[in-house]
Length: 321
Image 1 (cartoon, rainbow, N blue to C red):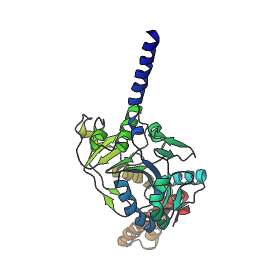
Image 2: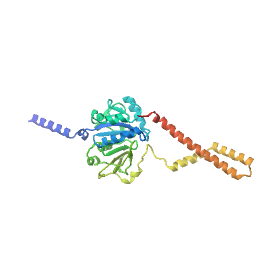
Image 3: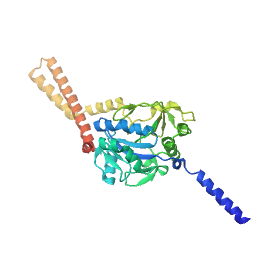
Image 4: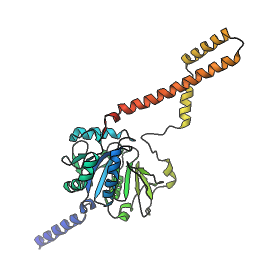
């Protein structure tokens, strides 16, 4: 009798484990890492074909756009080192063996790449792979955009999310049933944003922010409880805190109290007064011209500095195929 009870208990335990398995294992989807750039003509050719494939529901794409998000170029550099990839866009990776670059190869071999890749496996920039059910979204560097069927997830700011938030976002990405995907989402309802791709702008019906991750989808609005929506517009939509015009103006005013520039201005005005003491209009014009020239040169220097940093951050090393 005791042995029979042990057998029944073992069978029941096995059934319980079987049915409690994560829902990710009950579906089979393919994952790709995709590098693109808004403004790249070759990426614009790939984009509509790729999104049509995503809408079928079996392909999930983790996209890194590197022209508007320059920091994402570092991710491309890491993948290039780990998988012997080229520094070019468009480029797509399913696994160590399934990699293509250029618009024509990606478009012509997309179906083949999807069929040749392993289900639910994601290859990371460190050269290792992980199943989606075990993925911690915190290990995805920089600012990925994840496309899945009729929804998108965008990392807006680099914050660590909790285990619960991680599972909510992953369920939203993976679950084929939209209602099950949005049920239980706990975040801040925000206004939807247009999502720019290399060929178009995608519009979604609903949006919610979960600790720096923007989730958008088409169809049913969220009906589960969420945090106060009044704070939705206060979310930071940048790589750091926004700097207001007032702060910039105050910094400029502080910098204007420059002993060197003031002494030069004083010398110019003194020289004019010395040789033309009766022409106050010339003194005023000279002072205004000096100030205007300083403003213009600061503006030019600012543009050159910004462009120099863009080049330094490796944007210049990325080719278009």
